Image (cartoon, rainbow, N blue to C red):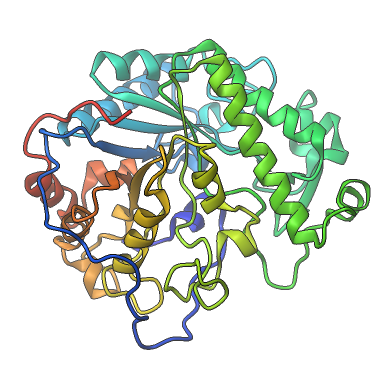
Length: 417
């Protein structure tokens, strides 16, 4: 099996780590405390991401019958229970479309193979009901701005909002995005997501790491007109873009709490906010991309302001990685959430665990178990989430089974709230 990065699987973005450094960066922050038992005695988050874009995890292919799709979904939930997990993060708006009968966007093409075609059942409604029946939380995973994995609005169904409002979109790197700089876009994408929240008692609204798109070498994200109209009062375009993303997060937070207060708001960003060589507040990493500088996502600010309820940094590197060591990233995030109400869960790269991996650490089925043991020394870490459902089921090198045996000896408790 070839190991592909999560961003590669979901959107085809380029690799994000610089290979400049050969020595591991110096440790920073607190040393881990004594390892206490998390287990069943203390509530923890044990989540799994289930991606629907390009049929990564579910459904296994487009065009299955409603019965086949439902059977696969229930099997996914059953596997989560068997692995003693307690939360499923299901992607329900992968490309400005819907896995429920949305009032604002078309049915997802990843169900029937054709955008806008009713699959004959309600996947999100079923997922919520069946997850709760199994004692699982169901977090609805939305992508705010991605419209399509192509740039031709003519390929969208005629009633698609992006086709009816072509000025809302920006083609970039072979894909189509809504423009985060337009206030009408921010309002619309919130309405599209809140449509699902109004219909279903989802336990969480979950966003991943896509705000402004990952940079593509030699390409510029063309938001000149929006910047001219709305951004000239900011010192730099980067400041304006971060303001746009901040505004989306802050507004969604307030609207979600007003609409359904029990539903939590969580985000799973790329794990490097900034490298410490650019900002003394940053992590001791040398990543080629940071959320603050390249995705215009000030993830640290969202935690400190309390706009979100939980954060799941995608710490998709092994212990001892030369430029982004798991042992540096986890302490940095623990320090970041300390003193806030924001819960910290760590995103784990189960998809990298493969006997054929070119990296020795990922060939070792004990690597992820070591991650949990390390994170246990930081009381701010309240759980983990695994990418992705396909690997939770198949477990190609036994890493998930090792995690369950070492750390999840009993039935999963209710996640922390």
